[in-house]
Image (cartoon, rainbow, N blue to C red):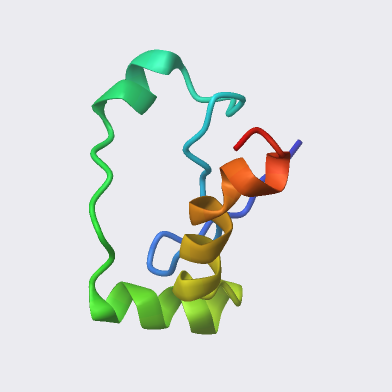
Length: 68
């Protein structure tokens, strides 16, 4: 299938989780660091992802699953 990709702007976000299709060796090497203020703004404007909502969702994951 043909794909058009523009390297000058972010087009998608790759997840960092146990069921991602990336090989495990790549996930193990990817450091998780806080976003810069510029990245927070870009995530919000380009992808409609709110950092506070993501933090809240993952902070309450145990309670949501009922395993607390």
